[in-house]
Length: 315
Image 1 (cartoon, rainbow, N blue to C red):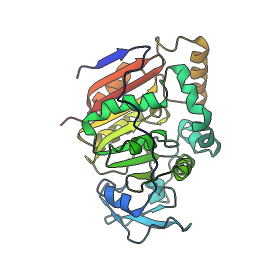
Image 2: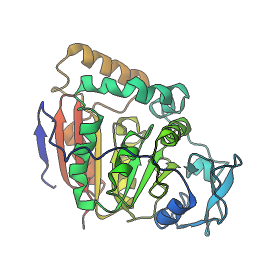
Image 3: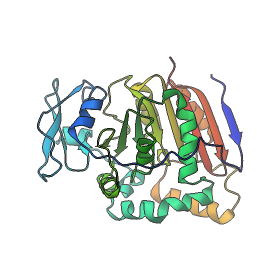
Image 4: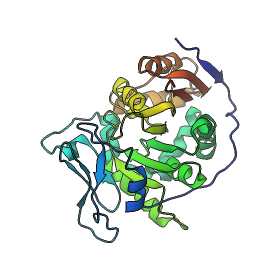
């Protein structure tokens, strides 16, 4: 079992400085750039771009990517590409836990970045800018490669990673259609957009639409407690990461060390119970999930109920 490295502190880990914000649209060029990583969620064979299928000005939904093996077409609209199993095989439907379905409500994406995410500071989260800077420290070994921002929500970190200019491609991935549309809305409002390095994708974290060993980094900011099956998700992450690829994520840990404020503890526990969030975790439980799914070098930073952890795929 690999040794874990950890640090529990009331002060956030130093970052590398503010790298800026960004938004980039969905277009044909960015899909061509990342087309070698996208794979069919049925057979995991590569997808082929359907030429002349992209149109930012047309409302009609058209096939954009196609599996040459399954002959399945995956569609996009003006906001995102849908690469879910249920979209690929219309006879297939998948039940999701309330912790996932709540984010598919049209109201939740609206309030997420406009106030809800700010409440996380009471659990020990260091704030969005500092959190992104901390993540970049773990991501240093894979800078210049591609990154998947899983459970991207409204695109807080997807935009940050893109503007940094330190990744060849950023995939903003979420299961919620409304979250992705909110993400696209924020993208559309930004100035100075470059349409080369960001693509929005709807996908299931337990069935990632990427070829094995094709992803340099996967980030999940405050999302894994919403995933229905952590073992399935961590296994998929390990599958798609390249050897040496980095997984970095944040979540809540409700063990004996968190949080000191009893009101915050009661609120977190009540929300978790109502939404059936899959926590409390412990730092050892997270390490065990990484290890059993084939990742090594587990390390973490802890502050109250906040934990940021990272692991890598062996080379």
